[in-house]
Amino acid sequence: MPAPPAIRLATAADLAEINRIYNHYVPQSTTTYDEAPWTIQQREAWFAGRQACHPVTVAVLTDDDGGEVIVGWGSLHPFRSRSAYRFTAENSVYVAPEQHRQGIGSTILADQIERAKAAELKAIIAVIDAEQTASIALHAKLGYEQVGRFPKIGRKFDRWLDVVFMQRVL
Image (cartoon, rainbow, N blue to C red; front, top):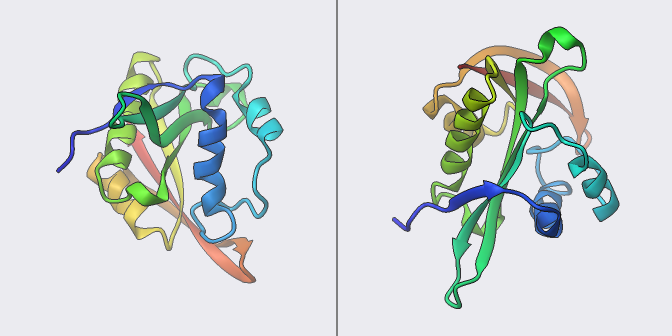
């Protein structure tokens, strides 16, 4: 098995690659419920003004020339807007499609857990399409428990979709 990627905080220079990875999934997957790809302007607005407890990270490998290759990314973001939820974050994890099954998602998710603990958050919530069994298994492997299922609350590809909520208490 190859060496795990390094995880570092994302910078504005990473946004095009973050967007490339994300937008790959929009037209062909229920990994995201977005139905239109994000523009770089949307990604820049999303990235601007994030709080320290809601980082965006990238997973990087070193290429043959010693440069970085972004192979995945993750983020923690507010779970809800009301102040009583401030100790809970929702996560996102996306791996470049050509890099699946290399342990990258696990590395990103483990890093998120450690960053959330350091930020003194109490819980992380994962909101996952019920058909995304690999994502559900990944989260379970890292200590998340399924705490809810919402039938038919999303609609994409002309069909109703179920959502699974998983939680990792820190």
